[in-house]
Length: 249
Image (tube, rainbow, N blue to C red; front, side, top):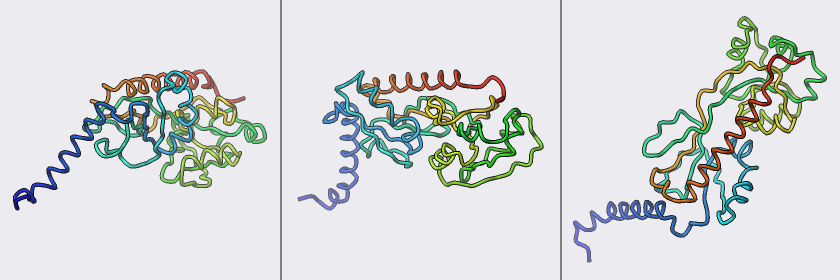
């Protein structure tokens, strides 16, 4: 039987032992050495990551990849997560955060809209189109200034609550949106979207690969980290290749 002092100490001791067990689990990968679990935002998963794990499996067929979609901050001591992909400022405590890529923002539209709409020869020609907005995020004024149109009265179009909906509406030809370079690279590559002008602005944050420092001792974590950074480099090369040198004709 525990004494009164033991009973008082039990909750804290139990929590401490559980934290220790979680740390050992992450360090050794016991029970999950053939699985890597990735936490990421819905936008990153849907618009960039979802088509890529198959290529990781080709290189490491013994490792299963599982995606966990969440906007919540990962608690690596509590959650069954190996690596997180996040969009933010970096500098998070107690984790290793490797910058994957910065974000560039520029107008994109469907090829059908570009072919059937007013000619796009100069940035100000976009003012004749419907401009799609994402709720809480409006960089149109800033982009027009960067493109050399500082006094434009920007006509604002429909406001949608999520970047995925903005992307779908743009691909459907409902208007012109400001695309996030990292997330729309595949749509540009496959011709679902076109970029009429080279002018761009920087995003407010960057994409990071995040994990506990001690997890780096696990081969599966190192393998996924190195492979993912290769994929990011490939995406950046694609974006550079597809960037227009001047405005659209």
